[in-house]
Image (tube, rainbow over all chains, first blue to last red; front, side, top):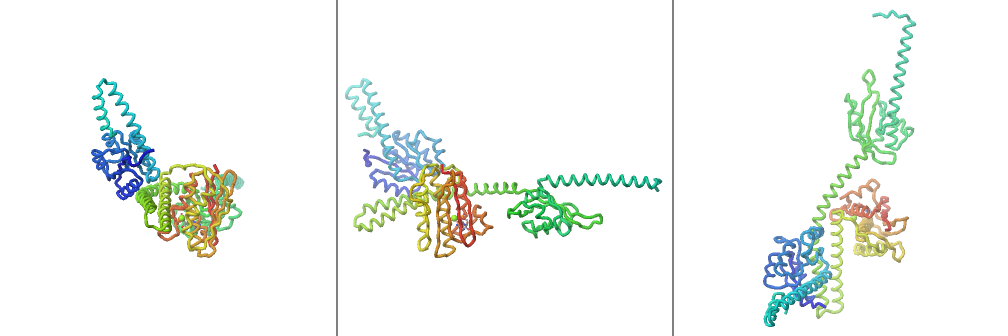
Length: 164
Length: 384
Ligand SMILES: Nc1ncnc2c1ncn2[C@@H]1O[C@H](COP(=O)(O)OP(=O)(O)O)[C@@H](O)[C@H]1O
Ligand SMILES: [Mg+2]
């Protein structure tokens, strides 16, 4: 079972009141939550802090949701993005970046469904991350480094992937 | 030059001329008759007073009368607006050539037949008016097509407006929904509340959430109406759908003595259709019924919902004993924006949306009403 406390969620939406209450609810649910009000702000925050799941509004002034999501993934490759789309924009959203997002959800969102989706996204992130980690570890062990070198490399990896 | 013919010759020539004239006349008559019998146009002639003396087969077909029924009647009485027709007649008498106008006639069943009419003043050799001849082309179909096009245009326009509004409303709705969820969560864990108060507040927060869901469903519907997307077909129980719809509307019934009679069995009646769309139809129709009953001010208001099977179709009847709809307005209620309600109470969208939805569900909707007595809407949709 996922411990919600471990799930670091980044929320991005220009609708401030909505974010205020959504983050309060998610916090109360047990998640670790950071709210940002634009794509720009989110990208900045993601430069300093690691997140597991981002919930991004598609339509925002400035950098839109799809673009924000792409840039976030460049900074944090394992971050899973849930993109919120308004009625009718799902198709266009899908065209512009289906592969990159974990899921597209129709707005107005159903809270319970969102919570479920965040948990699934977190699981997905962990799976991907573990697989990649194991792959790297294998690369290192078969690379002929000495025991000490391996240990150091693994520690390096842990840091990179945010695993303690 | 004086003729030198003998009287016999003269007689012979005159009778020959007469014969050829007679043949010509006969030919002309046959020619005219065949036009009058076979043309699809409404062709008529009147005497100087406007009394019909001839009426084509096409005219009989268009208006639904037989010549026997019409002979001797005034043509102006067949016009939708007799005064308008008089004006046309007057204009034709002042002019040498034909006058043309679009003018509606009224058929035997009260239907309107739009005609493109050319009216010609008939004069005798002395230039005195002896009557009128007219050729009218039935342009009702064309007219209908034109109206449909305008309707489609307006529909598209409303589509744009509606989806704009719905989009804007969706955001605050989402916020209300979050806040009610939050309030509910806080109340559930709050200390120092009596159990009774807690329940009260929890229910209130939940209700706000439910009603917001309802609004979301409406904006969603409006958006799909606007974009003309197809129905989402599912299997469900029509009985419980109708019960749910009625319970939605219960708040509107407070303080009024209106009996809502659900005239159907309790057990489930499965149907394959779009439940959300149908719900919207019933909300609209029952809301209208409630309004009509309140408007009448009777203290014995009654709204009945009846379901019956008619072959492959399910028929749902919604009857009320409210104000009723005057005969001449019964067609208009299907027009967009037609409303008799004061601003803020009516949009004139309800019935047209219902018709639109029912069309999408391959069904039919009809109305029967008597002013002062009540109204019945009948919705007929395929069972699967
Ligand atoms: N059950 C009814 N009884 C009497 N009049 C009705 C009924 N249903 C509809 N109408 C008439 O049809 C009009 C259009 O209805 P609708 O399209 O639902 O728009 P609205 O309810 O916003 O006026 C109403 O204003 C009313 O005059
Ligand atoms: Mg209405």
